Length: 371
Image (tube, rainbow, N blue to C red; front, side, top):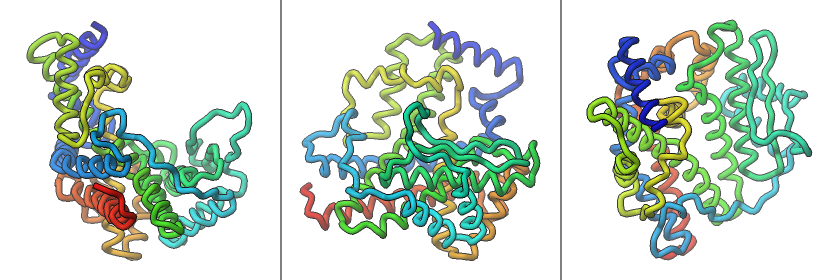
C-alpha cells in the first residue's frame, strides 16, 4: 500500500509540475539529461556479459559448483598486509603527486591536522570529507586500522577533500557539485592509489584478492545500480499505465531485471524475489540510484582517457575539478572532448572494468585455480 501510494504520488507530482517522465525531476536535480542517462543505461546493459564473466570466475575461486545470490560478495580473504599510517600517507601522496604536483601538494596539506583517522572508543563509524564553506579548508573523518582497504578509503576521501579545496574559489553557490560528478576526484584518486598498491604487493595471491575485492565493489556500484534503475522504470510505468501493483508484480519486475544481469552465472533463490523491499531509495528518493553508476563509470572512463593521453591529460583534469559546480557536467567534460550522450564514452569506463576482470582471470590461471 505504501509503495503504491508513493508511486501514485510521484505520478501526480510529475503531471502537475510538467515532467514528461518518472525520472525527469531526478535528472534536473542531478544537472543532467535523459539522453546522457539513456546512453549510460544502454552501455551498461549491453555489457551484462562482463558481470556474468566475473561471477563465473568468482564461483571458480570459491570452489563452488553453483553460485547463489548470497555467494556474490563472499570474500576470498584480504591481502595479508598491515599498512602503518605513515606508509599509507606516502602511498597515497605518491599516487596523487605522480599524477599532478598540485594534487599532491593539496593532499599533503590534509596531513597537517585536517584528518581524524584513529578508530577510538565512542567515535562514529565510516568515512567522509566535510567541505564546510569555501572560506575554510575541508576536514576528513576516517577509521583507519591498517588494512589495504583503509588505504583505498583514505585515497577516496582525500579525493573529495582535494576537489572541495580546488573548487572553493567558485564561491558558496558554485563550489559544490551535483551527485553525478561528486565522485570525480574521489574515485579517480582511489584508482590511482589502487594501481600503485597492486603493483607493490609481493604475491599473485594477494594481488588476486585485492583485485576481486575491487571488482566486487565496482559490480555493486555500476551493474547492480543500473538493474535497480531498470526495476524502478518498470514499476513506475506499471503504476501509471496499469494501476496498482501487488507483491507478486513487484517481485516479477525485480526478478526480470536481476536475471537479465546475472544470466546463468548466478542462481537466484526464492527469497531473493523479495529483495526489492529492503532498498530505501525506491521509497525515499525515486530515481536516485543511477547516479552511483553515472559517477563511477564517468571516472573510470576519464581514467582510461588518462591512460591513453598520459601527463597531458592531468592539467585538464585539475581544471575540471577546480570548476566545481559552476557549469553543467556535460559542459565541463565537453571541454575534454567527451560526449556524455554517446554510449561509446561509457563503454570506455566498462573497458576499464573488463581490464580488471581480465587481470584477475590471468592471475587465477597462473595460480592454478581450477575451472
